Length: 445
Ligand code: SAH
Ligand code: SF4
Ligand code: F3S
Image 1 (cartoon, rainbow, N blue to C red):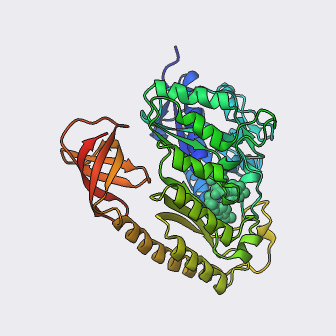
Image 2: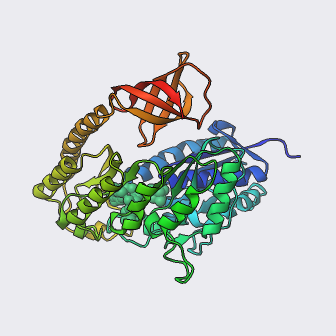
């Protein structure tokens, strides 16, 4: 037996990275590394990085400053950089930070434990960033992670090459897992008490397109298959490009009660001119048609989005078109970002960059209006009865609970009884706050 060895894993970025961190934690556990949340205690530090925006990458370097100091105190510490910055920068990271032992791209996470063991034995410095990805049929161990909801990776990579986006360069081309592997994983989760599953990929609508045409299954077919698994009561997915949102997928919202009433449909801009320069391959008119189609299929569906302001060439008029769009769609929530240049991307070389002050001012204007719309949207739930999945007991008080509505809102509620995480209850909403809803229990479902 080894004395206890500890792994500290810090995760930046999207759900893909969150799931990859869980997988790495489980793989390291097989090498007798338990997970710690205390950086100072660690024998191995894994920094799972994101490169989507400049700010995300800078956060990584600031954490690495702390890791460098720790390594000076503890020379045996193994330091690994994984994720999208690892893939993007490769060996340059070791040139820049010589205290780093391992640089492992997202397509090589399954090799991490072996590399860590070798590095701990003195074989330092490895860089794994080739683009040869096979997703092993991986059945998760159940020791770590949530006891009632999980992410399941259904595909990796992206073929879309939106001109601003680094993902096709960091995650490579689309590779889908087989339907059987995914169903086996979800079945395993269901048998272990998991109630909610979120199917994840950078571009889930393209699921299966890389498989043999004769036998391949589409994303809507996959959703329907997962929805038949007993024990799973809620199903979510993310993310998808609106251009590939099919009628078959909209039909799933009408037909599958387990499929939650939430769709994250990133629009990026309200201007056709900018959408074209972004290579998004849809127009605002077709986007709005899809919004209508989704609302027809599921009238109470909550739509959320991502918006970039200050894309190169964005005029005041283009930006106003984005302001008009949010007025038309009235999103329930949205992430909005200032455009930043990313390595390898086409738009990094576009002329007519928008000045930083202009981006800042536009973002503030957009976020102010968005927040008002979210508040208006939240108030629409006052007086309604919602199905809520219990997440935890509320802080401080007895009979206070926290959960999540189908549309993904956090719901704080009062109610007498004993509930377990993952259980579905009915809550009457009395009051809308700006980031959550408040109500009282009216029954169990
Ligand atoms: N696959 C997802 C996108 C994931 S990236 C999709 O297609 O919707 C998450 C969000 O980051 C994007 O939707 C976009 O709004 C933002 N983003 C990506 N690249 C960016 C950049 N260079 N500058 C600013 N925001 C960016
Ligand atoms: Fe990036 Fe576009 Fe692919 Fe989304 S669809 S990951 S924004 S290239
Ligand atoms: Fe970031 Fe990579 Fe995800 S760049 S958003 S961690 S795919």
